[in-house]
Length: 248
Image 1 (cartoon, rainbow, N blue to C red):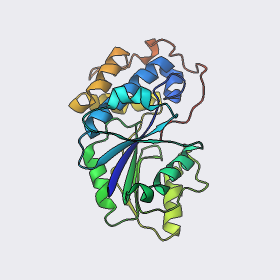
Image 2 (image 1 turned 90 degrees about the horizontal axis):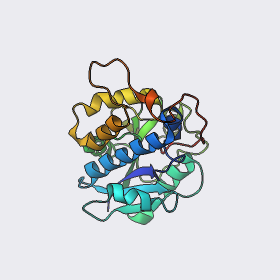
Image 3 (image 1 turned 180 degrees about the vertical axis):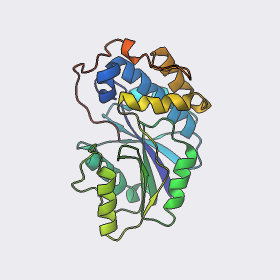
Image 4 (image 1 turned 45 degrees about the horizontal axis):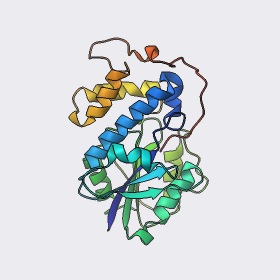
């Protein structure tokens, strides 16, 4: 297997996944929405023209994720080890050669709208670059790909708004070439939902996400002025909740 895509994901459990979003819309609501993200991603990438696997946490996460995404062919499941997100990304790419993978792309499950064509473009970028990134609007990235192994993660803090610039600077300092795919958003904060609401109006492959938004009162038809997230149970701004690192 030369090319492999992995989707990084957390078990969809209250207080564990989408905790930043959950502190505003309620943790139950955030997990319901995240489950919909996984459903849509699983359906979209089930028959992609490259190997697709899941990079999950904690150790028993697949018990919760499999019923949402299992379809069609045997999934390739890898468990994330202990450590911060930087270390866990490093482990995935470091182990690629032993798994028989020449080029690996990792995408975030926080961007449920990602198209197969974007990942295909990332693999094309790896034909002529050592690394490829998909930037997010907030300074992070929703996609990272690597041809071979290059340790560009050492001492790079995540979720600070400069992680992409820092990794690219590290790569270029080492003489590595870097490609990019199109910029887009991920869903970390309640404000990010506006991007998603605009897409579900015309994307049939976001069916589960649209249903979840509607069910939770987080979807407004075009022309409405205010989302109804504030009416969701436990949606008070500043509601106490466990802090958690998002999936990517």
